[in-house]
Length: 451
Ligand SMILES: *Cc1c(COP(=O)(O)O)cnc(C)c1O
Image (cartoon, protein in one colour):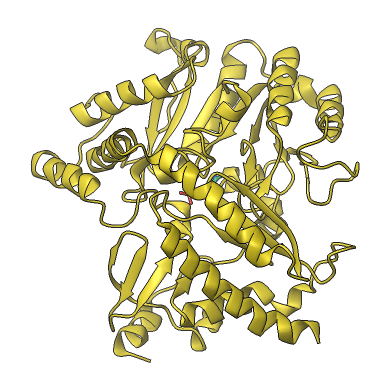
C-alpha cells in the first residue's frame, strides 16, 4: 500500500462502498486523466470504460471544455442565483431550448442529479395543489428504477439494494412492474412485441391515477437496473396514458441525456415530450456538479402569481446555476456541434455491437448482449437456457471488476451485468483493448465458476 492509500483510508469514507473491501482493494489514487484514460500516482494507466460513473461524456481533459471553464473562472466563479443571473446560464438555457423537444421551455437549475429529481417531484406535487387537485399527491414509478439517493429520489426508485433499509423513511409511492425484455413474462422479444407488459401500467393508472400527480421513469434505458433497455413504444403509450388520466410524465434523462442512447435525448426515440425532464451527468461532460429540471409553460404558469398568493416554488440549492458548470455545459454543446460526435459515435457503436457479438455471442455464460447508442451490456447467467442467474454471494461481477482493474480497465459491473458506457469519443482501438481485457478476466473468473 502506498502512503497515499494509507492516508486516504485513515480519513475518507468512500461512496457506495463496503470500506472493509478496501483492505484488499485500496482506492486507486488518480493523478491525472486524458481522453478515456486515468493515470494513477505511479503512472499506471486505466481505461475508463464507464465514463467515471457515466458522467464523463467527451473524455477527460477535453481542451474545448477546459478552455470554456478557464475563461469563465477569470470572470465569475459563482453568484447567488435568486434575483441574480449571468450570461452563461442565460445563453445555456437559450441553446438547450433549441435542441430539446418542443414544449420544454423553463429551466430550473440545481446542483446534482438527485436534487433535480427532488425539484421535479416537489414541482409537480405543488402544481397539482395549485391547479385544484390536492388529492393528487402520490407518485408512480417503475420497478427497478433509479433516480438518486436522497430520500425523495430513493422513494421513487425501487431497487431494493439501495432502498430496502430506508423504507420507513420514505414516501408511499406506487411501483409499476417495469418492462423486462430479457426475461419477458409474455415471452416476446424487445423488437417484436406490442408492449404487452404495458398492461401493468394501465392497471395501476385505472386504480390510482386519481390520487397520482406524476409518474417518473428513466426513458428507454433503466441504467442502474443493469442497463435494461425497453421499446420506445412503451414510452409512447405512457405519454398517451398520462394525457388520458391527467398524470404528469417526468423523464429522468440524467443518465440518458446528451447522446448516450444515440439521440441527444432518449425521449426522441419515442418522439414524446415529457412534462418535466431532469438532466445532469453528461450536461457538463462530467466536469461540474450541475443539473437542470426542465418543464413546460403550463407547469410554470401554475406558480406565477402575486407574491401574496404564496404560489412560488420555494426550492433552492446553494450552487444552482453555477457559472463554471454552465461554462462546462457550453463546452459540451460546442464539441457535440463542431465535432459531429453523435454521428461518429453511431458508427463506433455499430462496429462495437458486431465485435461484442463476435467475441461474446457464443459464450456459455453470456445470457444477453443488449445495447443502445454506445452503451453495451452483457448479462452473465449460470444457465443460458433457463436464464438462471449466478448466486449473488459469488460476487462474480465484483471478482471480474478486481481482475480487470489489475489489467488496467475500469469496468464496474452492476451485479452480474458487465457494461461499457464510455466517452462518446472513444476509439475502436481503445474499445478493442477493453474487450480483450474483459474476455481474459471473464475466462479466468467464469472458468472457475462453472466447475
Ligand atoms: C446518476 C443518476 C441519478 C442521480 O444523480 P446524482 O448526481 O448521483 O445525484 C438520478 N437518476 C439517474 C437516472 C441517474 O443515472
